[in-house]
Every structure is written in structure tokens, then in C-alpha cells.
Image 1 (cartoon, one colour):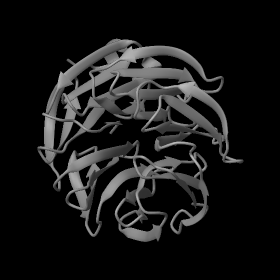
Image 2: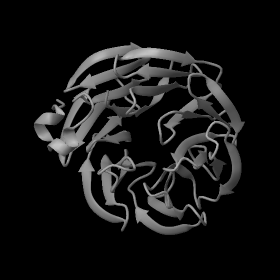
Image 3: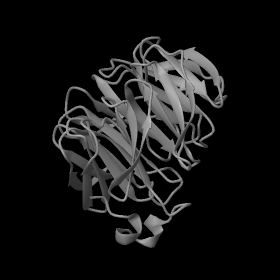
Image 4: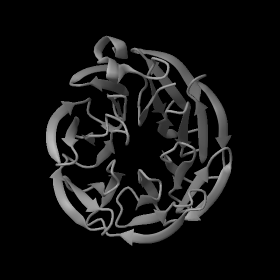
Length: 310
């Protein structure tokens, strides 16, 4: 059972705008976004068919990407209501917010496009077929986009004008790249792989690898604590097949500890000192504060999770 943040977290970690933390979980076989608070399901929001990925930002907004329906849904996380649904996509997959939370970027694998969304779709730009996972630079000037779940190339997108992005180059990932994320200082990009157990650390300036780390059985996913907060010192790397999350102190790339999760926990979210994982194969959502874990089964399959702080 999930435990309320105030009961198990230090005050500095538990402090949010409303005192609440929701885990928003995609249940694609049920076509629902499941909202979990303190170990119980408090709401199930109907979604367009095949909701796979979800992302939230501390501005009372979450975005859910439904691949099968070709739709993107905006959710008001304060009222827990659907705000708007955008159609017209072929195979949308991954959503990411701009650093200030005002814009949403969505990749469309089939079209090779990146869409820019606010209250409407502002632009769509071709970045390369297979466009999938997105790394957003903390200053909002660059995106790195893996061209496929087994990507042989990474597209670099200039977002200095965030409403009108443009492709400015490619990176050789030195393997079949899967996921990627900028470090909070924007100097490096960590890349994980669909084949092989290493994580490669690339210089964002030279676009070349400068270090390798062990990440567990592939594919791995990687995230960092939100830039500009007291929680931005940690990198988290999941191996869903191993049932682990590795925590690194990213500046010196030192492994701090290994947390154990239900197998199939590939995707994760971190916010206000909390870490949440979702098991695709077991339908279990787990939350960690420090090393303490609490879990609850909420659906037959839970692909993705986002922590929301209304």
C-alpha cells in the first residue's frame, strides 16, 4: 500500500503546493488513466484507445499519449479532469514539457515528426522517422530525439525559438539507443540502450561519448531530479528486466544504491524526493522515499507513471 508523503518523508521532501502527490498511471488495456493517492485508486479517467505514455509538470497539467488512437490528451491534475484531446497523429509516443512548462513536445514515430502543443498544435516539424524518446535541455534550447526504440541515430533539434523548432544535426549513439536525458546542468546527455548493459555519457557540446556506466539488463530508462531543485543531484536508471533502479550521483557518476522493483518496471517518474515506477507486466505501481518502498496493483498492465503535484 502507498503511504502518504507526510508520514514517511522529511518536511523538505513532502512539501508541495497542495500537500498531495498523485501517481498518474497509464492502463492501456483498459483505456484509462488511473489516479492513485495514498495507496488507493481515487479516479479512473477514460482515455482514447491505447494510452501508453504520460508526463506531468508542476503547473496542474499532465499529457497522455494514446498511440493506437493517434491522440494526445491534456489533463487538469488539480480537478482530475480531461481538459482537451488533440487528434491528427499517426503514431504518437512520447511527450515532454519545455523547461518552463508552457509547451509540450510530442514525437510521432510513423511520420517522424515533432509536434509543439500549447492550447493548440502550434507546429509540426520533421526530425526523422521513428522519432521516439526525447531529452529536453534544461535551458530549453536543444532537444535530443532517439530515432526509434532501437535507434541508430539521434536527432538534435534547435528549440531556441521553442514554438518553431528546427533540426540541426545528428548524433551517432554508438549502439542501439533507447532512452536519453540531459543532466540538470545541460552539459551532458546520458543515453541507454536496447542492446547492451552500458549507459554512455555524451558531451552535449562535442556530441561524443566521454564515459560509460553499467545500467543493468537492457532496455534501460534514465531520468534526473528536476533541474533547479534540491533534488537535481541524482540520476535514476531502471532495468525492468532485472527489477532494479540504480541511483547515481550524476556529477561524479558514482553509484549510490540499487533499489528493487517488481519486474517489468521500465518507466519511472521523480518529483519532490519521491520516485515512482510502473510495471508493464504486473500492473504494479511502486513508490520510494529513500529506500522505503510501497506498492499497489492497479491494472492488468501499467506502462508509464507520472507524479503530479496539484
